[in-house]
Amino acid sequence: MLFSNCNAFITFASIMSNINYSSKLLESAVCEFAKLPGVGNKTALRLVLHLLKMDTESVNQFGNAIIRLKNEIKQCKECYNLSDNELCSICANTSRDRSLVCVVETIRDVMSIENTLQFRGIYHVLGGIISPMEGVGPADLTIVELEEKVSQGIVKEVILALSTTLEGDTTNFYIFKKLKKYEIDVTTLARGVSFGDELEYTDEITLGRSLINRTPFESTMR
Image 1 (tube, rainbow, N blue to C red):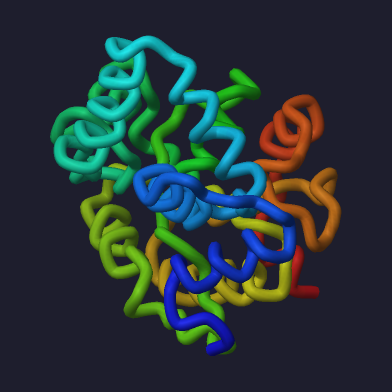
Image 2 (cartoon, helix red, strand yellow):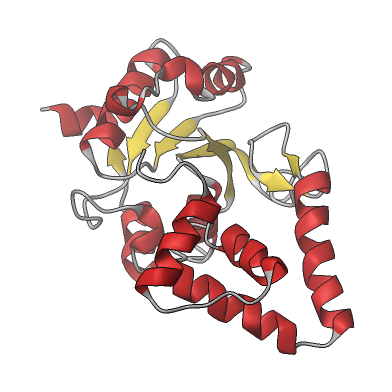
């Protein structure tokens, strides 16, 4: 690795961008912000300087919110969504149709589908998709838990709402084979979602229509 730690990287970046850190505390804070995805060294510095301009109470609230998020957030025991309690607000809602399960890759996909206002069932978050190149196999996902949920006999339809990528389609097929022995409908989103797209980047109208016009998964294999 070119840089063994964040401080070494920031030292190099400081030279390259003519940034002179007069404070080790400032440099340390910038280092931590720069660890976030999509946040470069200059952006991290801008964020830290903005925090310094804020009043102490606001900064404390910001810090406490992050600490509480890490220490107190839970995983819903039913769908594996993030939640403040053992059950997320969706699973705890008795008006949701528990016979209809939408399988998604991440919690961001739950948010995307909920924003369409077109789905009144419940979700099952896999926690990823099968990707041998990244070392992710079926055992790393909540596929076993999904099958256990279906085996209870309440579920009538499973909607496979994964990203329309090669990895997503591979995961769809694996789940379909696992659920084929049960007397349920296994459907997938209509191809309003273009191949290669991720759900979180699909507009709400297109995603909503793809959900409403879902098709039997088996028909996509022909």
